[in-house]
Image (cartoon, rainbow, N blue to C red; front, side, top):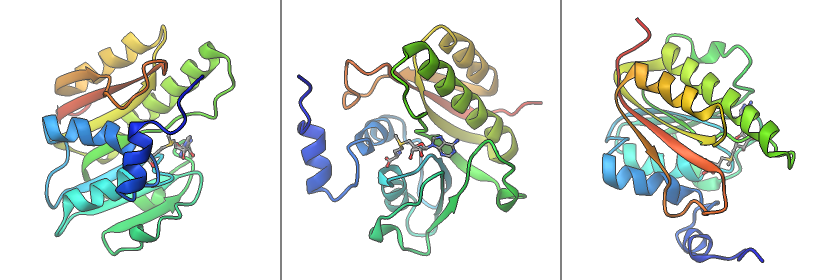
Length: 195
Ligand SMILES: C[S@@+](CC[C@H](N)C(=O)[O-])C[C@H]1O[C@@H](n2cnc3c(N)ncnc32)[C@H](O)[C@@H]1O
């Protein structure tokens, strides 16, 4: 039986994060400094808000985090001038982002799981591809990208696309990501663009 309240669950509760997923970002941040002070960060699929909350602390004092999700974020701690929330589907047009440029694009997006591994994998890759497309429009040259994907047969193709656009790419399975979970994370550092 799955341990519902594991170490990371309790740690998140103690540290006032709404989800244990924060440690999947923290581990990579500690190792690679994906986000820096004063950065502008775009957090795709930001609900319930752990990554955004962590990013807001990391970009202080002058950075901004923009979170997008289908669902509203309800974290009081995110009612700050350094956080803006947009409720939207990332497949829709995103006119409010027009002319904006970010130093970092994060995506912890996940589809509503169906129980069918293949279907869930395909939907997850679609989200990841859309996140990568959004890098083309909104990520600054030299910027970083950190994106979750459910593993499966289309994963190598996605990782290859990321490799074409970033100088350095790592595939990461953070310790806080459950071993039984098919999720894996792609980190692209130093964006060179679609040119
Ligand atoms: C695992 S949660 C993200 C957790 C978040 N990183 C945190 O630490 O609190 C995945 C999120 O992706 C969002 N999502 C899935 N498909 C989306 C879409 N098409 N557009 C925007 N958000 C989407 C879901 O609504 C869900 O809130």
